Length: 199
Image (cartoon, rainbow, N blue to C red; front, side, top):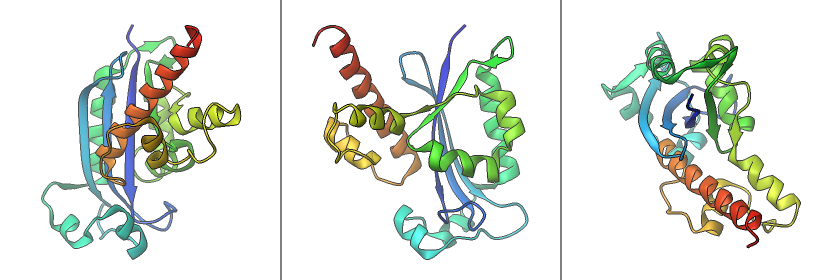
């Protein structure tokens, strides 16, 4: 039975999900070689009201809120949830009670998981579809820093991309952030393989 990683990133209208809305989400299904085999790129708005976003957040992610609202491709949270659940169920296979789907991202522990569960995919539904463990690439970077394998200047995604020489995309664009995250993870795996093999 294949294990699939669901690499994802979200862009939002605030630092806290209770103060702002979720605006975009990009989800990539990865095969066992961490190659993208299917993508879901969502532009989102809340059901029944206009999205809330502060100017500072929009300056960071470059989203024009008026254009975002007017875009016919922008869908409600309820519609986005249906699309995401459909994608996950397409690849879901249970090993007993455990899912073969593992969520993956950069700093999803500190940010994206909370936003996802608050606005789009409630915790109960999420737990029914994906494994309780997840792959946070930032955690892997932190472990390597802790043991002196990486310099202390490597921390956020941009610095990790720079250090490992990963192809740069646009920061705070969900699809680009996911692709850079995958690139950093593959470089970390390459580093660990070289040590394992006596490099």
